Length: 165
Image (cartoon, rainbow, N blue to C red):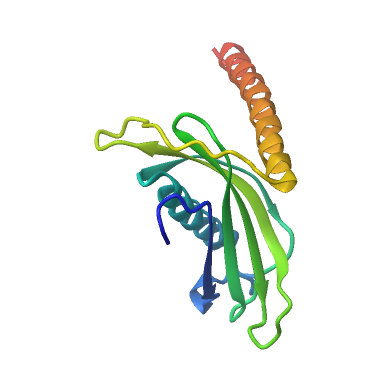
């Protein structure tokens, strides 16, 4: 993978150690794969070490079974000064059959940091296609909604602190 590459896919087989008590791949294992793909994508785009700042809107659409071929697709859909919004789709299939099915989707925000752990600038991503413009606009709307939710959560926490003191 070369620097400045916007998209990548991790592929591997789901292993027996990934299974939960219900016999399906554990959600925590899927979240780990999402974080790995987000890191690899953001580090490749920025050429810098990156840390996870946010993972949200995780939708578990269908289960992954042991032995499934798993594909974790990561794509930069927005860049800020030091942050990158990465759209993640997880798909799986029986390796004997060519049909992938969506299992999980989410957005992860990664921040590039310097050797002192301080945020550092990343290259700007400029959308060119209609699809890319729509993805960027969606990322901006989600960012605005997260801001509103954050403010509401802060008010909620303040209320709980004053109610319990």
